[in-house]
Length: 209
Length: 219
Image (cartoon, rainbow over all chains, first blue to last red; front, top):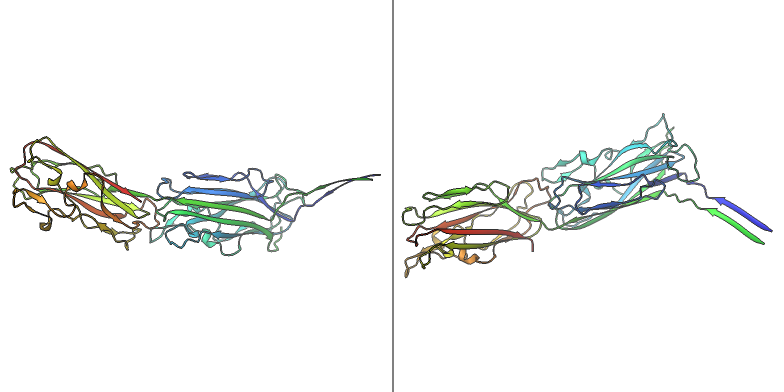
């Protein structure tokens, strides 16, 4: 007797993945690695490179597209660890601009909801490269930065994202947003700084589609 | 009995990770702190002047240094501006070449030199830093020179008060970090004047070329 069978593990109700190739500008000896495929996991490594005055550029900017899918209202939160330098003149969380921009359908299978919107939570609803200011102490700041991420911080929420309760990630079955990071070269205290952000999608406020 | 089964596990995730890093290297720079002031000269002048916050590239014609110049000293004051994100050292090296051949020709010891008052002011400057001036300051100060009782020649006698002390790169000034975390476009920094002085004397006639190099490093 020959028995043959196949089973399919159905898709989770919520999913986060790469939204496309991340990009970096203004870097000296910097880079960003991540997948251009929207069906691969979100795993991105940013090297801002040299951020002392040896970098003659005005700002280093990184854009990370993030794809999200859901069959229910959702929210995206982020946690941040690192960038705790005892020397106040070293790179701090407040020196890394962080904002969310351009929430858009991934493709034709992204659900269009007319009774609710996808809402970027304040203060993250900006491109930090356009909100650069110089404080009274001469240090650069932004409308939002990694210093605004405290514990698990909700950055985006909205109604259902996907038309189809698909069994697997598709090229077009959700939405994508840009996570933007900026760092302005300054007379920081010398050294190497690092941080890790974790983006999480989870059930959100119950809003109609 | 043979059982064959296929199970498709579909990779999805509710989390994604972004890791980031940034490097800040030691950085130091020296630029002009502004226009040169030349006093006591007879003839001569500033050929290439200092331009505030521009690379230091000054050329000065001290003019007549013989007894035809009745002034006490010919003095050039050259403002310097230093910036750093690390402790710094400013060193000086100098060469002096004269067309004369006797001991009365102008030599390195006849060129008075010193760094004046250091100033750490302005937004973005670490004003708490304390700098160490290895020179004796303005070489024309009475305490920094006198007439040699034996030779009659005027000499700059203070510690590192003439260019003979800088035949090779020698520390003239050092200190802690100058700048706080501000962009390079912030124009402030540590300012200090460099003084050069010659006392007109019965030097052997001829021409003299003096070349001075300022180098700032972050050891």
